Image (cartoon, rainbow, N blue to C red; front, top):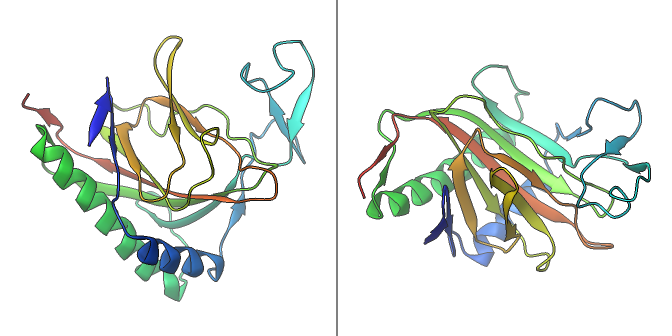
Length: 209
C-alpha cells in the first residue's frame, strides 16, 4: 500500500486466476451500456486539454466514454441477471481487502453503507471525461484494475487545482479516494481492451495517523 495525498493505492489484491474468472463472467453478462457525455447524440465531444489536438483548438470526438455494467445501485433498480450476485460478491471481496489494508495505515471507514457497484470496459475508441462520483464528502470510491494495458493507460486523478496524478491500469492493483475527487479513465491501447471495477460507499471516515 502507498498513497499520494488523498489517494491510497494497493497492489496484488487478487490473483491472475481470480481476475480471469471475473473477466470471463463480465464477457458473458448482459446489461452493458454505452457511455457518452450527453453533448452529442452519437459521439463524445472531447474538451480534455490532455487529448491530442484539443489544446490546438481542434474539434475532437470519440465514439464513447467506455461501457458500463451496473450490478448494484442503492438508488436505482438493476437488471435481475443471474451473474450479478456473483459479480457483486467479487466486488465486495475486493472492497473489503482495500478497506482492511487501509485500516492498518490509519484510515477507518465505520458505519459503511455500499451505494453502487459498476464495472467498466474501455476500447481503443473510448475516452473517459473527468468527473466526480459524488459531490458529498462522506463517500469513498475504489477503482480496481482487472487487466494490464501499459503505462499510458489507466486513471487520471486531479487532487487540487492543476495537480494531477496518473495510475496505470495494472492487473490486481487498486486505488481508493474521496468520491468528490475529479478523475477520469483512459481508453485502451490499439486493438486491446481495458477492464476495471468501480465501487462507491458511504461511511463516517476517520484518519487516525
